[in-house]
Image 1: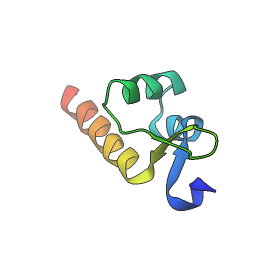
Image 2 (image 1 turned 90 degrees about the vertical axis):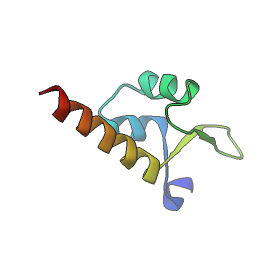
Image 3 (image 1 turned 180 degrees about the vertical axis):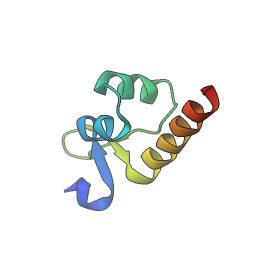
Length: 66
């Protein structure tokens, strides 16, 4: 349901970013990436646009470290 609206659950979002699900949960709890909750089951959700922004930041960070 929420995937069609541009949201991903933890597992899918972590795969997209190339990190472990627990890393993504930690980033969310520390406010590094906004987390949303599914209204029915309270699963963590992440907006695709915000994940793309994080991917860009990660790529820039890797490029700068070379």
